[in-house]
Amino acid sequence: MDKFVVRGGNPLLGTIKVSGAKNSALPCMAAAILTADEVVLENIPQVRDIETERKLLESMGAQVELGYGRAQHRTTIQCAILSDPVAKYEIVKTMRASSLVLGPLVARTGMARVALPGGCSIGDRPIDLHLKGLELMGAKITQDHGYLQATADRLKGAHIVFDKITVTGTEDLLMAATMAEGETLMENCAQEPEVTDLAAMLIGMGAKIEGAGTSTIRVTGVDKLHGVRHRINPDRIEAGTFLVAGAISGGDLNVDCCNPEHLAAVIQKLEECGVRMDVGKENIRVRSEGGKLRAADITTVEYPGFPTDMQAQYMALATQSEGTSTITENIFENRFMHVSELSRMGADIKVQGRTATVRGRTPLSSAAVMCSDLRASASLVLAALVADGETILDRVYHIDRGYEHIEEKLRGVGAQIRRMGDVFGKK
Image 1 (cartoon, rainbow, N blue to C red):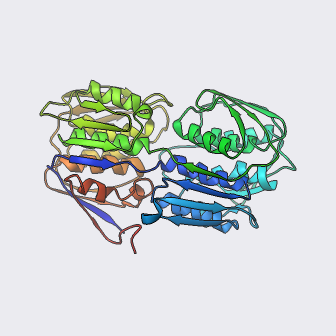
Image 2 (image 1 turned 90 degrees about the vertical axis):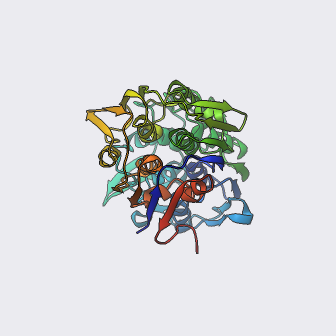
Image 3 (image 1 turned 90 degrees about the horizontal axis):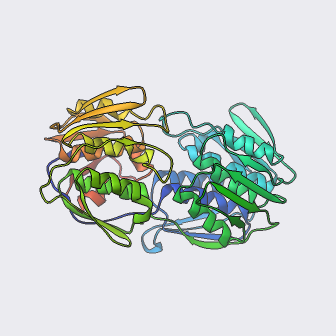
């Protein structure tokens, strides 16, 4: 099992490039189910979840070609025949995004059988909002032996009001609605850039969608969708992680190939902490210039607020900020699993319910720590960058789910980090 070994103390200097967004790529790959034509997706990140999605689509009968290197992170998908519209447990058990194939499978084939999803253990992410929406669109839902099955001769347009904002629920039902008969009106939708990216791809395939990126989306169903070439958005969470890396290490780091508009809440909070940033069109430069970081409170909320996927990374920064920071987690109820590991490194953090109180500026020291989920892993890497001595991070397969060769990228800007074990993505 792979480990990272990180020796802290080096400021990060230079340029680091952001990969495509895993959370955009996964629904866009699922959307290829909606057409028999060829779909070409560019800027696909080389991460484990993408490989899992490839296996999932191929198990259903799709042809999938993943290309990296000279192929410039491009994947070609053709779902001419979907001979087995089942998302099998042995494939999807490590990836919660497997539920995203539910809507497009029912819309295209009239039937979907999907194993209840797995993934990070950061809290309850119920699929019931997906199912309520599909039922309103006329699907019949049954459950047995750990699988959900949805069937419909043809989905019908419906008025769907989400009980709570859900990104995957919005994406799943958006895909289903594109080929439903009539008009579908969805309210209280997620507004994340990943939803907008998916909608742009679907519109390129011939879908009729209005309002993506707002709380209300209107879809007029069509009989058929066609192929498309689409470029995936840059990963705003990877970019945010690198912004924190530059700030926490006291470096001068240019985070390139990103979309600063998607990072407004993170940029605002980092500036409040005393981080100097020069924001360009597709890059953000982080400069320390010897200034001290200041404590600031955050509360995670849905986009465009401060993202839950940046909470753990921000907590690492808070351990090095002067004063006391209060971090309130409103999205997932079990997303403080990194606290115990940061505490092993010397952090002063107290948790009560959904609120963590971080007293900085605490010296961190090396320790053996365990990665528990994707973003917790990133926070431990960030903490290790400033810890005294050599920190060993175990179970880094979690970070491989969503960060493309993070150790190579960080090493390229001066971090002392190496991988022990089999290198993911290399032969």
